[in-house]
Image (cartoon, rainbow, N blue to C red; front, top):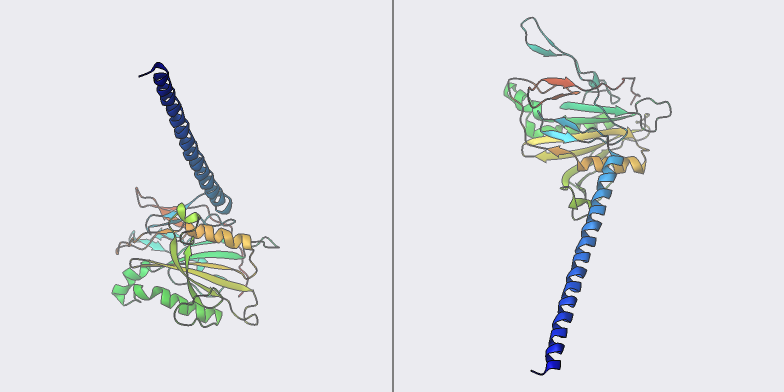
Length: 296
């Protein structure tokens, strides 16, 4: 082989090697930029959670549930007092949260929160109620209502309280006094990359103005996980801000529910308490200050 030919071949090989390294470097730079962008998007997702939700997560291991509530909600409302009777048995007293602005106790109450939401006088004017069918699994043996009918019975009670009628079945449109299905977050959305979308049935109970002097509405988010039925009831003024409604949506992304059943030989932990996994001993959270609720 001529000398010049060998030099040209060597030159071509060196050039090819350099080009290959440059190409690999270019591919590596692209992957790096893609990962950097993904990290940036994930950080922004975490930022929306921190900005929208209370810092401390709420957890009820005895119910298999957890959530971070939307700001300005924070700690749970105080539950009923628990004491021992003469025989040493635990007895649960009256539940103070049953005295709500609707004028009637809500079935299956397990937890509740209240806050002042753009309240001109600083008094509580917004509430969240966590309602479940857990107690019905125990009571059905004594002739109580079926756990399978819990959400249906809850809807009928809210229809009675708000004096509205919800048509049977689901509708494809979002509106007042209708039942519709909503995935939160929306399936295949950007937020769905970081959390599993949850399937809710939603009803917004809005009574006529002449009946509703307190301008209240109840937005109910229902879920079924196995045999467990659960509802989050947001009782608020009709004039809530778009920012608050957005925070509610973020909170619903964090609402996890497992199919956990309560032991039949004891009731659930009292509302306003949570059971520690190690001992099962109720430990009360810091109570929110109580005040008179506006009339319905």
